[in-house]
Length: 98
Image (cartoon, rainbow, N blue to C red; front, side, top):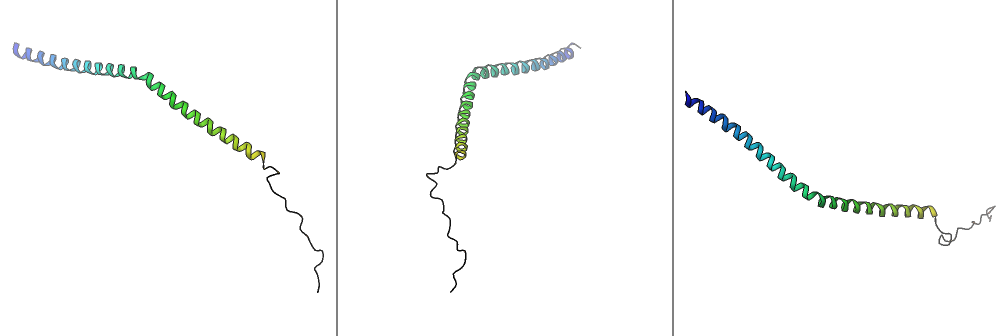
């Protein structure tokens, strides 16, 4: 009766050992991944700020161009460059009869 009891205890020990070993491997892998990402955060943060700064500059230039276009349209045309205005046309009060 000792042999089956030892075999069962060995099997239970192997199952528990495999479960603990795989949990430890997952935890170690997660910790290594965390450390890798933690080291890369400052570089990623700088890259993100550079991209945001580029988008903000483009938006500011577009906004300035739009404001300039609206101001130019609101100012209207200069009288000097508009050209001569049409004069009154000659109208005849009565048609000529022949």
